[in-house]
Length: 347
Length: 220
Image (cartoon, rainbow over all chains, first blue to last red; front, side, top):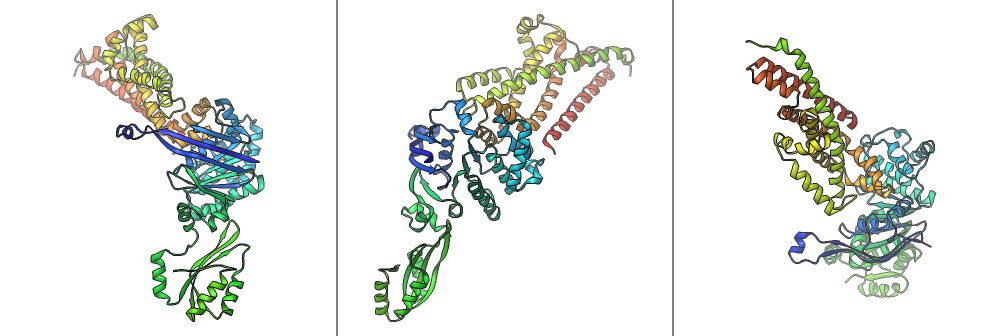
């Protein structure tokens, strides 16, 4: 069953007065007919450029921002029609982690992490135990009495995660949770999110503009562009065969693509043979089989571009080869090989 | 230089006490009302917790209307209201009424400005955790702004001390009245400057206390 279900969701904001004065439409559509399903227990990635509407979309889910139209269900409950009191109860079951951490600077780590518990009416004695347990989980046992300004960025985000998990929510919304962190700390925080998912079964929606976050952490991904989902599916599928140009641009940030015309021209200048692209997929024929076959045709080869990547734990490679030898043989070989392997000559 | 200062210590002490009383009580009432108006201004603004344009426009207008009135005129203008509320239009009770009212309007802006310094992200975080709006105001918004708020109130304290010197105009007492009556009008520069020094001392002490307190709250 889907934990989160969006159907034809629209969100419009009134346009600024200055824009309206110039004859612009009175509203700006930020989310334009989004439908998606997030299954219980998965890590769902939502990627898009800044301004694509990601942050708005995620705030529609816990109704921090009200929808304009459409249906949003969380755990089977329609949230778009809930009143303030019911929303408060619902939100206790949805944790949220923020790009800028949003810790309360006037409170200690204990004060921050215990706040959602106090809201939920948990007695103090119980809160102390729960906060200790959470701090141990995120690896900050010694920081119980520290203030946020005494912590590093990564530590702050771990406090943010502990705070978001305090009431044992079924759903965690991570809004650009690693975008303010350096690469090393990013990996630590992503590992923590994966651990939250694995150990507690918490469903996580990860909002990001970094494909690397999706590659290492998400199981499924949706690409948001100008308020619409332009592509969605299992991370491996989207990464290995991106359909939409925007998706391709994102994928290109983490996976080496076949070079564009200018890149190919440069390669060609350096390598006089025939250029061919070979795509390696998880579960498909192996590199060994491919190169063995190529050898049997008597075709020489060298790897001139590309690499092999791990996507959501699966292998994917996009290799550009320079094939050398008799040109007719090379073409025969490519024709023969293309029936069993994903290989094509680069014109 | 001739001075009657040695004969006036008793009156000076009395005036000192009256000033502290007027300022203290007015600041207390002004802070409570100013905090409420300031919270009203901040939360009813577009995008606020209780966003409500008509309410905001009204509060904003009232504050803007009364705040720029020079206190010496203000105290006269609100005299009928003072008589209605406190039962008298003259003396220390009336001046405390006027001071409290003027302080409320001034402090409401101080409060509003300092609440703006709070990162909206923490308010959003509190709401995302399922906190009610009231709880978010009391447990997050005010504590997060407390350090600068105390500094703002210290500023208001100095302004209230300043304004309290006008009490004599409507028959109130205090150091302002004392200084004018026994110093300026008697050409007794020593008496004038003695009250100046006392007022400076009051302001300095208040400022020091405010700074220490805000530093403690902000842990710097």
